[in-house]
Image (cartoon, rainbow, N blue to C red; front, top):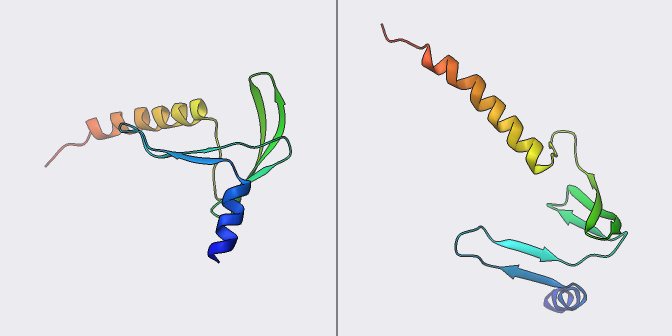
Length: 93
């Protein structure tokens, strides 16, 4: 098992960078058509690379939502805005 691990480690360009203020970040180098598997359930495929733009294909089970970060942030802000007025109208009897 250890030999298999070292064989894969030699093939992949992987670096785990620890930042004091951020969570750990896994940095992977992938070429067009190569795939990354996350938790055995999610596949991220590099579809195209043009200049500084990378096109990714993401395959995930239906119960896992996948959003761009700016869309996810907007959803979270909308949820928070909907919850605030409801909490403000709660009165104790």
